[in-house]
Length: 250
Image 1 (cartoon, rainbow, N blue to C red):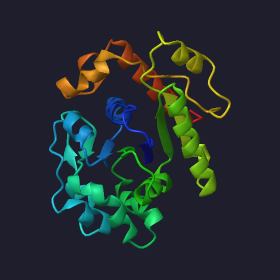
Image 2 (cartoon, one colour; image 1 turned 90 degrees about the vertical axis):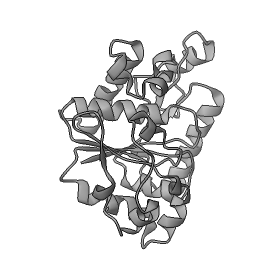
Image 3 (cartoon, helix red, strand yellow; image 1 turned 180 degrees about the vertical axis):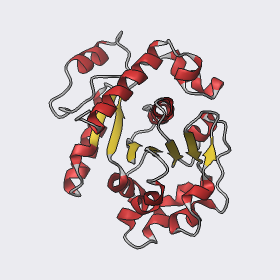
């Protein structure tokens, strides 16, 4: 089982759209896939038409009083399940900190699912916290959507710095450019000539596209309602590139 977290300190950079579209593509491959909506806003749950509510709240899940599999819901798509958000996730840091070895908590919670799922996608809220550090420990890959602008690049550098300070494995970090508008000179130059502190940035990028915005209306992944759109093609290209990183010998 591979755990893929989509994370950034900044909000509004396309984390949830990425989590929804990549998990959908993984399921189309025939892989048993789970997406866990860790954001109390519940956008991923909304896209999949599932109520952002967990019986007993996040506290019971984190403390292990209720197994994750008891809270998992099926989606409209074969091979794709969702662990919904809950507004109580706003207290996730507190729940994690109250457990033994909090930095390993998510890893411990996910471990029993390893025989059931090929991929677990974590749609993470925008923060650096105890819950985030537990995500860093559990993830095999940390996808960091980055808008090609000065401030967004600065945020990426902060994440890299934090990983170095706290001795996390920075090789897990895979940045990619999101919400790219090639009509803008800065976007075009940064995508064509990525800065030296992003040596592992993915070749694939996600454009600023109306199809991605329409996900909120259609309540579905782009590949479901606009399979031949540029955005859908870019997500497919990105998923193939990520798989080549996860399984380099294949």
